[in-house]
Length: 532
Image (cartoon, one colour):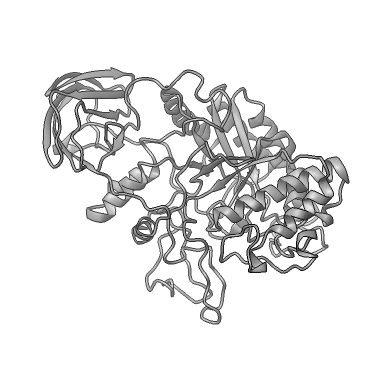
């Protein structure tokens, strides 16, 4: 499996030229979030919606349906990825995001993706040159967070792909780069991850989650061993299904089994990973020890007539071996693209099985939330930014076209308009189009700007009252608004309309302000995102 390396999350002002205007969207009204909203870590917190996300950045160069799709996806919180830069540069980039989140009382989700030889130099190659370079980068990352709340998704693939690694079963894995010393590669990886866990986890308000791979990848015992070696007992937990497509139900069972295995090998029978029930043979007391490999192409559950989807055997094994010991290691699940589960790869069609790489006809999954109601599950997150490409997928052919799609896929991390359309059209649960639109026409005047905003209500209900909100990208200040009453707190602006706004109708605002004129990225009407 490989992951994208999204564009830098540092926000950028884009000059409007002849059409100077207001700035990007704000997800909530001007009133501050409740005090303590993120004091307890990730569970129960309000996720940060970045008004300068790479998704909204992509929308600026798109038109028509593709632009509307990107703005719709940009209205839902996704993780911000940090993949390169010097320690000073990553500190500044992280600080940008964390500062904006703190101003709204929201929880930012930050992906640290900079391990040496990440992704085994495949689609998302890059990262630090050595352990010292990585530790310095992590120090910068931590400095950018400081004592403010943040959640760190630490190194997707970091425990799934380790150079020159030998499994518990004595199998030497495929990633064997000549550039990395075979005798020290695995130990170095654990040194790097443990340093990151201790450095980031040592901050006052930071939650850290390690790579737990996914339900179609490493077996439960193998990943449990790697998580323990990587420092999961000093972290807040682990993450699953990053940039992948496995059903949420399957990931939830898989995560619970990992947590149970960790409890078993640390509290009941130290080191006995081989007794941990796993997805590759699911027999147990409840099935009279009949078992098989579990299928990723259906949702797992209790009592299923199809043994390949039945969890009773594994569940009963843990009941047997744990006794009264309760699993406590928590986890999060990436639901950004798993609404329809994984692509059932056609046998014998392509030379390589690349079901992870821009598979066709997938859909968005559960919306991000930190209130799951599921034991041990801290959150459903969009770790992978939906709509960003996994890479140029050739499926074992010579390229340059993706033979399944009949086109050349964008490079890893670049916007993939065709895939974004699929994810929205096939979302499960379904997702509605944005139901408001803001048209902006502006002119730069000296050291300030004047802009005419036309706000259209495309919904089915009359809005009375209504408030339009957005965020500036710097020190801009609204001086006057014709057609509404304005409040501004820092970069966040809220304008309350002078009269009701009926379905299908428009309202006009004229905004005058000081500071740089910037291109609008997104507005929100009564807290709901608009196209523009």
